[in-house]
Length: 98
Image (cartoon, rainbow, N blue to C red; front, side, top):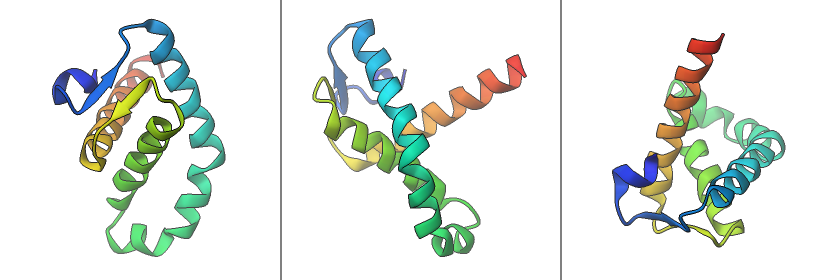
């Protein structure tokens, strides 16, 4: 979904397998690496009243792009935007189902 908004900044092979594997990698990174990033950047998160979490989400999406070559994100701003879109979709799905 984020790839459609950004045009050429995010590209992937048109396959459901690529999306599923990238989502699984993102879930693993969110479980293992994201808590460490949040703890290390806690002063920045408090100073920006939580807005730095958007940057951390962008970092995790960019890390997935670096680890999985079938998903290609050209720049960090595209990764931040993808993190925002993923977060909003996650919020909407949680609100509807929960």
